[in-house]
Length: 421
Length: 209
Image (cartoon, rainbow over the protein chains, first blue to last red):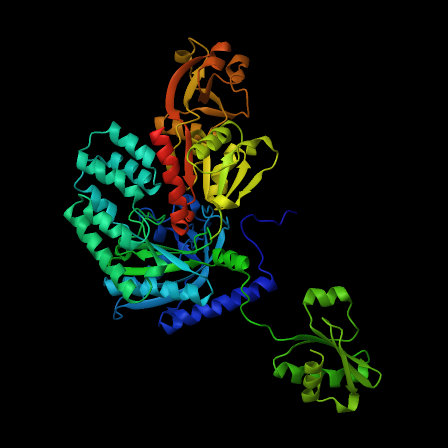
């Protein structure tokens, strides 16, 4: 039998412990900003995800057929189910709605480096506000979350989904030409852009803009003035002014050092409508978070309303943290009690319980365990009942202490544990 | 700041890349390619160079294991990775072409196409709406029409001499190709200053020379 499935994996104790520590910190940041956690079903109807352009390709979703022949999918993202939730169950609830989630999403193909089919995402959604302050809140919250899980130098790259369309709108281009230019601009392919512009008929002013655009990215303070100098449409100019306002406000919050601006930042998710952003660590080449404004997404459910959110890619975060070796939480000492003879069992059992109450991690077993077992379990101390004595040994440094079996009390054992530390 | 790592396609392209870097005052030792080492550290330039198979360059760069890459456009089109392609280095020039035996072109019912570039070939014929059977080969593509394995080949053509010597003719020129400088999408943002410096130096040299 071949029980191996590609793209999924078991999470073993050491990693899970790390995950739990990260989850705890993320949840605390979300909760304290009043984003309440929800869990949506693993199975969703295929219809939820179809009909919206550029959400997720149908071929990339895992499909299941239920007993009525309805096609279901394993949730390929979490934003859509939360948009559904807002538009149905919370239809009449006052806005804005603030939700968070920490769950898995499934995609059969994944262009991000770790090619996992089951990915963990932690994110928030703010539904029912089109205000600039909500965009700022999202970006600030993402930076705070990243700092809380010890991502050094979090870097948020900000773009705008509509900006390029506003720039295109005064240019005389066919739809096909726009598509071609869009993919060249998002690839920052200066070479081909220049070549392509020589092939098609286009005025000099538009040419100047399109050749300049792929070189404009970086510190907002450098990019915004350059962008303003270009002969772009009035609508595009207005969007640039709005972005400038966003950057000014982020500067007021002392966050501008964490921000870069790329007017040609294009997201894989086609549902974004306004500001879009991606989160990185300053010295690491993997995308850690994704976010943006999606003002049309809930229209699908009959009620269009503005919304903004982000999601952290937990597996990518873990990969980063493995690289930086940050140790999250000191774990309590682990010890094993070997009582050897039946008549010591109840005394050993009570000792184990009272040590557990003091937050020690305690195993209890009749016979002495071999070195291999001790190493696998990562034990720190071994406590043995030998004749009328209790022998306490630090496994790491071999220091020993002992006490009379009649004196055994948890306080004294803890004292002795400190002694051999 | 970490060193910038550059992945180069082993062989002809790497040779020309070293020449270009040296011309742009980026001091890569001239004899780098004559050793069998695959990784070179250039601390005084804050660079590290890795030599990999051409088809692996886009992979190294997409995963961020290398920040920059130098690779032929043919490989980029075949691999179709998510990268920034910032510079045409103007060397390694050639073209993608369809070729086959003379006089046969019009009599084909459904083409059998032999190629080293199956993914690009699939996309190319799909965009033309022409159904074809694709046979992936790893070398000596010209043999395929001569032996009857396929009737058409899609391959890179530089001077056309190999085709001519094997009695084949070009049916159609598809597009021009050359070596490109590609950049990892995250590195471009996280090491913008260092990477822009390299791009500008190379661009100056390419455009000026």
